[in-house]
Each structure stands twice: as C-alpha cells, then as structure tokens.
Image (tube, rainbow, N blue to C red; front, side, top):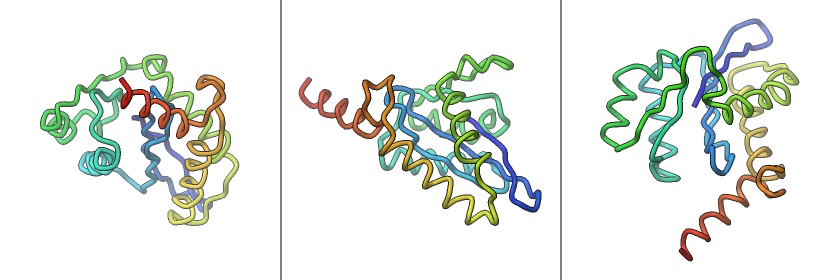
Length: 158
C-alpha cells in the first residue's frame, strides 16, 4: 500500500491510495480522495478483506495514515502483520512503486481530471484494464486476474 498525489484541472490536489497484491500483481484498490484519514485507509482494507479475505501481511510506506493507531488496531484485530518500508528506500516496496509508476505514466499524466468523480471513474477504468486485460510477462503472459484464478485453483487441488 502506498499513497500518490495528483491534481484536478484547476490545481486542486487529491491523494490516491494504491493497494497491490505482490504475488498476483492484482490492483486490489485505487482510492482517490481529496484527503485521507487513517480510518478511511481502514475502511478500504475492510472492503478488500470482505471481498478477498484478510492478508497475512501488509507492506506499507511510512505515511502518517499508516503509522497511526487505527491501522495498528485493525492489523491486531485481524491478525495481519504490518511491514513498514524503511524511509528513503523505495526498493523495500518495489511492486507498488512499479505499479504507481505505470499508473502515473499511463493514467494520471495522460488525463485532465475535471472533478473528483471524473478522476474516480477514469482511474477505476485504468485499474480494471490493468487487472483484467493486460498480460504481464512476469506472470507468464497472463493477466493478473487470470493468474490469481490459476493460483486459486492450484490451492484448491493442493
């Protein structure tokens, strides 16, 4: 999990929470908001956990939204280990950094967002395309969704 920042056409800033499954490369969530509080990060994690189940660990950067009591309490209650990246070492969270770089180049820099609703819609469209239709060489030419389904089937058999 990490945060990014961008702005609307009129210069108003907004932040973007990105959540990626490091194993399947699936984009689990991209949440643009004008501002974030720690409880909103927890709400996003609850939504992901409801759909996918709880992760064993979360790798996060050192933003204030991740360093507070709300995320600590959520992790404790859900038995999730939080792995903070070291300050100034983006390689600690390389998958999310690579994902955020693609999001920046292919969506954020290529778009002129007219409103937060417009930003949410365009970013979600990009996320779905990244997850459902774009093959990844690191996944043997599969899309992240197809790879995740294949992995899920293998776990059932095992």
